[in-house]
Picture 1 (cartoon, rainbow, N blue to C red):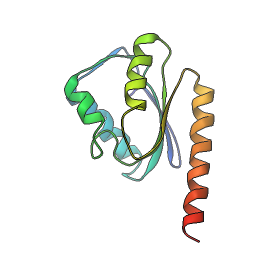
Picture 2 (picture 1 turned 90 degrees about the vertical axis):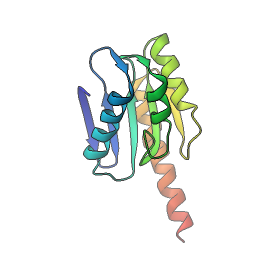
Picture 3 (picture 1 turned 60 degrees about the vertical axis):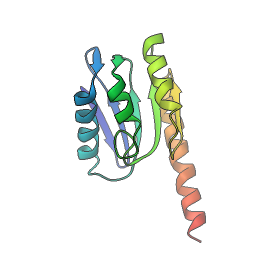
Picture 4 (picture 1 turned 60 degrees about the horizontal axis):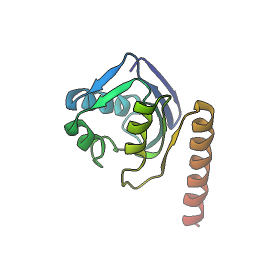
Length: 129
């Protein structure tokens, strides 16, 4: 991870150099995200523009509830080219317990994740009444 921004319970992850993600790299990325977020529930914006390939083993791990999906409340995936867009869509459409969307615009991804977070907070407050 070359760049990380964190604001309370939202993390923005931008990966650096062109990356081929194998199982070891996938586990390192998830471990780092969880450490930065102190193993708490959070929302994520992930820029996958520099990912060129994801191994089958890494894909399985990243789609597991206790693997790549651990502690995520919502996710926005950013991609700027056809290869990374395909990768982003695979993960956005993975069955999971939270919403995820693909974006080509960072601004739209941030806007959506903040609106989604606000909607979830309202829903949680309504359920606790």
